[in-house]
Amino acid sequence: MGLGNTGVAVARRLLAERAEVRVLDRAAGVALPAEIRGAQWAPSVEADAALAGVEMVVPSPGVPASDRVLTRARELGIPVCSEIELAATRLEAPMVAVTGTNGKSTTTALIAHILGGQDAGVFAGGNLGTPLIEALGRRCRVVVVEVSSFQLEWVEAFRPRVGLLLNLSEDHLDRHGDIATYAAVKARMFARQGVGDLAILNRDDPRVAVLAGSLRCPVATFGRGPLEGGADGAVLHDDRLELRLGGRAGSYSLGR
Image (cartoon, rainbow, N blue to C red; front, top):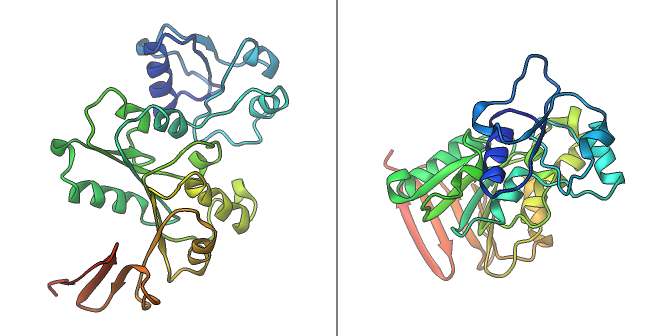
């Protein structure tokens, strides 16, 4: 559903896997791109007609959960799957996923740069610009992906090796309704993480820090406030960064 960058990338990938693909987009004047000409084209049809014979629906992030096709799909028991879910279940490389209200793109790009960038087999994408599903078929040592709340609405098995939640403030409430629902959607990123994974949380943001007690995976935090006991994480001082993780510790000058 939706013929933006995400929808076209999903259709192209599924066609390459020899799936039968039906594309739905209601925008006026939109035509089926040449690169996915093998797909069925349904520019504007009723929900039951759009879903006839369908085994899975993949909505673009801009399609709200209240859309009549998605509502009908749930009534019919047809799975609705986010593009990031579709991609993540096919990826072999470990994934670092970044979400939050502000700073996602900058943080994603910075992590990818620190890890060596594209020349070192690092894929950076997701909500940042390049759909995550574009990482399939590439030789990736690690995948760094920016994840939005819209993308997290339809995930069940999504499980990053490292999940990072930067902050939470009132945003997209026209779609999510209230801050509690918005926070719950963001928290879905950590739902499938386990012992071998890591969640990184902002301990200076109360809406983020409260998640630490409910996660099943190891947790590290960052902030200006002190780390308690032997907890893992980072402490930012004016001119120094202190790090502690897995029994190792270090102090680094920020060079100011």
